[in-house]
Image (cartoon, rainbow, N blue to C red; front, side, top):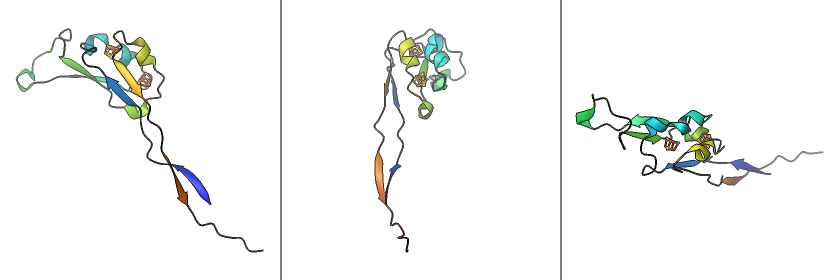
Length: 108
Ligand code: SF4
Ligand code: SF4
């Protein structure tokens, strides 16, 4: 008997263009709209500035990440709401492999 089994589920690839998304801490539109809470914003820390308050209006002080992309349902709400078109989502093809199993013949 041959069963097709889903193998190695692949998650959507979320790319954020950091040349377009420069002040994510101020914008946060994608964070607010994503129903799966995929995104977060992190402060870009240099050793000297570790204890300083960083101005969210300054380009590059904060950066957007998508750490929970495995939960993305590809609803595209974030893409639609982004004012600078910074988000791209690629959905990889799911691979399937066939596993051969030897069936037992029923005797009559
Ligand atoms: S496509 Fe939908 S689920 Fe995926 S990151 Fe964007 S808003 Fe969130
Ligand atoms: S909506 Fe766009 S510009 Fe705003 S934080 Fe998200 S990716 Fe950056």
